[in-house]
Length: 512
Image (cartoon, rainbow, N blue to C red):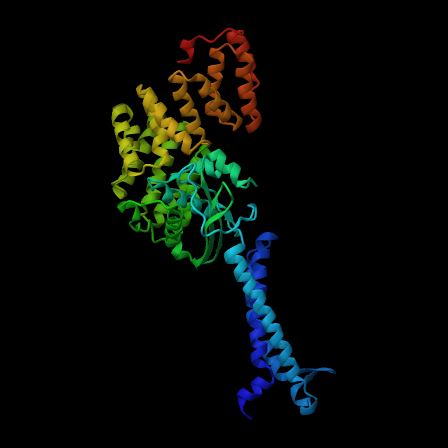
């Protein structure tokens, strides 16, 4: 008997098609259910392998047995005139059509209708939508949602890398990292986020990492009306991570109709070919230098990344910045901290010799040879190279103030506050610049906002400001607010104020 005819008669081909179609649908449903129900990521692999194992058994069953009105029987035991294999074939054909329809629905939903972030309201996709113009060409990159079993550092680090990549564009206003990441985990209306950050668009998305595979979903949304300006899903090998970042950045600039200069349109070099080093770097990138412990962990992670790839420039820069932050916590002599930060920065310059940012840190860590003018000059060069890089500008506000350039500090603080309205360092330093320039009411507004967010540094300045005006209760309340946020006991502040000032205005000389 002809083998093909026998396979066709026993519905082997239809069973195979139906099994594959059903398996695809089951895998897609599992893929969505795992993160939604907080199931282990390994369940996806288990379902896939069970499906693979079951496939030959399904074909064997279709070959050896036949479904009859009297139940399941061996094929050779079924008489030809009593066989209903033709009817069974028609039913299988209908099942295949139904499963293909379901599969098509999944494809349409995933690529055109779905939102990658469950917390965000699904927006309508309007390919013809024009970029918003009221706030100019501006964007906030929200932290991507982690859909894997991993910790959030990979998704957060990837979001920050995209933010830094977009920030290199001179014609695009990019909200700073601190302000954008302040909304992590919050189910906030995008219009409120856009209003608070003064941006016209928001980039959000999700990241799922499984072994050497990665799925990144990203969408650019106009915060004014909630319409998609662009969205895409990338299913790639992990080694393609840098290409994906470049593609996302280019798609965003195209959607916002941003014109790139010659330097900006050039394809960037890969920062590293060592994916292990890059993964460690992403973890280090997400560590906020707000405690001595976090600074030490950050330094250790950057050292690990450098050990994996000694030519990884961004890791060297990150270590230099973290070493500079280490000085603030005074766990060693100030001169020792300065020497370490200075040495780390010089080391980084041997790998990234064109970094104006690093040159600024070199000047800031010279110790006895310190020169305000040289530091300001170095940071000015950093601004020219990376106009949207927040870090050197934060330090420059402080440098201008200390060197007596009040108006320059005020102008730079105003620009930086527009980009990073929720950054504690910028809020504090900008308010100091405002106060020094005589705009004390505006300074108090910003200090009060910072205090409500628990910024201890701002609380110190605001505390002195209130005492200068003789507002004893207002000054005490500032530290009570910050203490409640951080769980700290500042009850001694009241006794200190009562004993030292007895309700009298503070001598302005003491606040200098």
